[in-house]
Length: 316
Ligand SMILES: NC(=O)c1ccc[n+]([C@@H]2O[C@H](COP(=O)([O-])OP(=O)(O)OC[C@H]3O[C@@H](n4cnc5c(N)ncnc54)[C@H](O)[C@@H]3O)[C@@H](O)[C@H]2O)c1
View (spheres, helix red, strand yellow):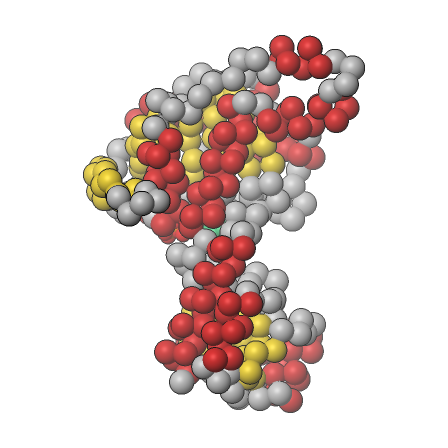
């Protein structure tokens, strides 16, 4: 049985599938040639990330296809309901990248409290001539330890972020209308672990108490953090968005950074992705990454293995 991993798959996933008797093709077939390629090669499983679209044309015209797999979480690029109605299996790997996204949140936070986002822009330009001035301008850093992290959306990534925060010595509060309470287990390298019990608090209270806010909700119609929410935040607080563009109002965010209400922001996702606004890109108080939350070798390995395990269970 042949599997086409059109947007790539980790070597560990390929090996697991091959050992189970599948042939794995990793050619990237152009979108308009996919139907032909699938039919000519009798592909039974089509694996994608976010690039390849799996719409009705493929679902209707590829009789050999039994399974569509998304390496990652969001399935916006797949007509999931239609595919399921037509009898196809549709799978994804929702948990595989949570720890990687959580670490990226902390990369933004640790970088933010010590101005790394700005120092890395200015050191190459002025580091040799204005070392002392730069040293002075970044001299007022703070520690994360002892501060309060407010997590909006306490699902997989929200909880993975909380684990790191607890390890760092932060107080964690969260707001999630669908999760009243949660137990978060923080594992240590030697097998020990410590459990923490949490109860959801309302968003307004969280915004007023948190020194740092991180948002981990799915895309929604309204901003989760807009102008009125920012107004409730502490003076000098900071915010990270590694969820989806459009969850935070970027115009309100830039205003809040310009008038010093907020000290910095960390953004991995953007309202106008893949063409983020220049006002965001050029803002000196935003730590920027180009949607790389899940882009670690470990997450890609887990994604590949999780897909392979599900495919073996469904197709063998
Ligand atoms: N940056 C990246 O590369 C990257 C990678 C993976 C996932 N993500 C994104 O991260 C986000 C979270 O993913 P997850 O796996 O933790 O999802 P999840 O479904 O496990 O958790 C989302 C949580 O948000 C809560 N929620 C929904 N609406 C809310 C609201 N208005 N206020 C507060 N809470 C709300 C839900 O109850 C749920 O508990 C998603 O938007 C996902 O697309 C980003």
